[in-house]
Length: 494
Image (tube, rainbow, N blue to C red; front, side, top):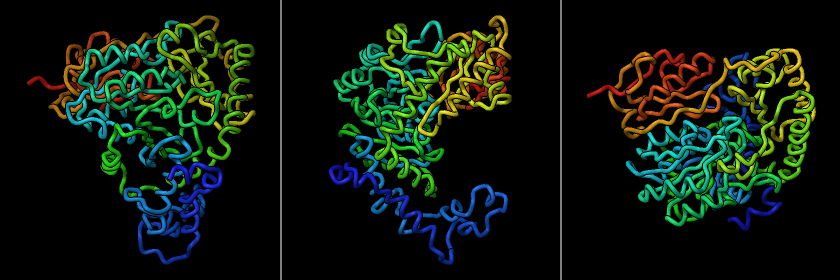
């Protein structure tokens, strides 16, 4: 199939998109779901917002549109084209986002009780995967760059040490690139992991674009990963929530992957999401190199001008980043240090959004991360450069305040598996009294979605103090029952 799909003529096709277009144009009397019947019964306000074409495309699993869980028609063809375009042996379309793909990858690679090595700065979906699969995480702390405090990635030596201490580990999961674009030496990690005969899973949610230009860091599949999860909507042209899972090699049973996906994905997938994956693949296969060249040029222009016009440093790859495990930086991620203006990342984010018409991808205590993609134009980066200059000149303070200082997340120890803690009897305690207890829930600042606490971790006094800092800063918290962090759910003592 790869030989038939990996050529320009084949990649110019979009079989699922074309099938959906054909069905949307039909005028059948609809006696099937959804209830709005091709938009005829849609609320008027929704119809005005989305338009007739979008509503007519909201169709169920009609025979002509194929079946996501037993594909034999346009979905099968579209997935084969995606595998060829991204360099995989097999690819699956996801409508529940990369979060679903991470959990499915862990279900496919691990049995209950199996150990999986993963960085402690993994996305909350990895913790959900551990709860679902019953796998026991072996956490590796990523190295943090001293001046910025940002995690640079996990070095191959750290993975080697974890596997040496846990030779019974059944899989390794790596996050690459990080939210700020740091990429570790994945080829070296793959070589080390494969020496033990176990699979390497990669959360490449923010790296679906990497395969399409030589100036970008090497893609996970090219580096030798076995399973790769990509959020196609994050950096490509797919609709929000649309993602892909790619597999290569024989270390993972592909039928088990398919079974895991059927367990986790909706049985009523949205065909607009699926078709957007097909269209995004077609676009990148035909135009990806040119599109990414334009994006890289915009990113370079902004990276060069922001320090001069706004007086704010833009994060680059430093020797300390390299010593911490990062071997490359995705240049399409711009992380700007706003502390020289005397502002926190959270305050700067609010000012940019409310007063200057610029919205960042991720605010942090001292930084703002901006994600550039094929959808950005020169006018966008000009606006960003100009707005940061205004922010620094008109809203900045004379001196940086220590009020928004936030240290590194304190290390925590797992006292039981996330699954065991999640299902254990629990109780709510005031945050100030939670030290010494075992967390029964995740506490996750969002974005970027990296938990401070996961179920099963012992709550240290330093962790309580860190959570109190987050509360004072007004950071948005997800995963726990009390998003205001007045209380935590802890495992009830027997």
